[in-house]
Image 1 (cartoon, each protein chain N blue to C red):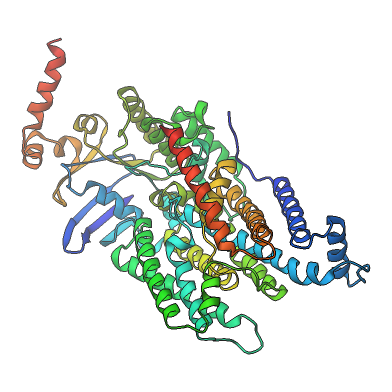
Image 2 (image 1 turned 45 degrees about the horizontal axis):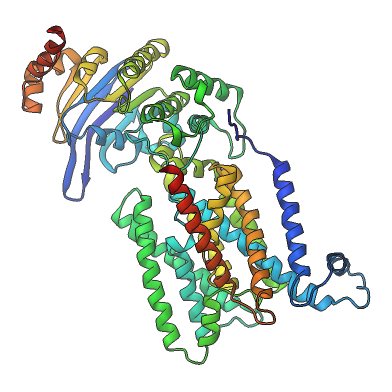
Length: 253
Length: 343
């Protein structure tokens, strides 16, 4: 589905992504993990066109550089890390923009199909009740869900989520990940997530990319990538031991 | 549930009629008051080429006040539209032609033409207009080139920062020109404060054509401006051609500002305050905000011009003084009110 070949990003002299290659297949949920500054979000920025890159990004064999922005948006939907909004748009106005790439002309109204996708996205994210509310009055988690609804309305072949559980409380973390899992099963599509929570990555990911200092350390099935040894070499600490000790706090009551 | 989506042509027709009503009032009022009914009769008969009834001052109404009020309406609509578009494009409520440096750039061109008497034979005010547009374009090119070289994605903060620095630079150039142009300094200074005294039907037609073309371009990008107002990354992610939209809107805005500056001089705060106030009523959706800003900008500047003509009659205040005075107080009030609301 998506293939990155020798992807590199430099800001002046600073190399933030160095010769990274990977593939994402159908129905895969690829977790990108690694410490701060590993280059996880830079991969997302390169795919979105927000960062200048060298190398090649192919979607079903087509070079992303040769596709128009609207064509890319129909293939790849991106939920960015930051969900700051400057003006008081309503939740519904935000979600409706998810159908931008499907509009035939500048002045055409939303089609029946557009309306259906918008309703479905609002329903999946639990925002039907507050669809008319200004996003400036929402909590960080509700705002995050409004943008998740927008990207679901976009109906992409591949969903890229940059730290999707930012601002979300535990029940919403769980319901969001369950919803995305169901979305993959229902539609047969794929997801890439940038995650800090390694437990979520292990529980929901089918594949993983382990990054460190702009380089790809390991890629493949989650079980092969997120191992105790590899995580220790990247994070510089025994992650397994730390997470186990955290869990034991609950077991001891 | 508050729902404000959807486009309502009826509201725009009503706003257009209200603007026409204010136009009629502003034409009839002045140092010499003419009843509304007579004003309407003079305009109507003059437009149809019919004789004007005796005792009615056709020359004042039709040849002096009407073109001036039309020019003020069109300049107000243009500046307000530009401000609304740029506040959305740059996701910054403080953005307008002056923040971006376009107005300052146009001012350099216009001041140079005024100070050195540059003119185009057979076209009154053509020299000032041409140099203002050329310098507005040139400023935009300089600002965008600098922004590109610093920041690939042309991020809004980079543009605004360069715009502010460029405005300061342009201000120093304008002061330099004034220093070396004793003979013409009065007209330059008066023009810098904004003036609609030299309005004519030719200028009104020029403004109308520019607003029709550039305004259509900006209105065509209403949805894209919504996406930009939410965030540039968000616009890119939903499939907006970010660089193309930014370039086209900025060029349309710079042409419009170049023409308005050449005709009315430097009129501050209209592009900043009016879209702010309009947004409080329409919400941030540009499908509604842009047309509404045009109408409110037109009404505001017509009333400001009327005030500048009558308050010290027969003396006249520069309109830039009136807009800056009213605008700055309104802006502080809005700022204080909105901050207090949040606290």
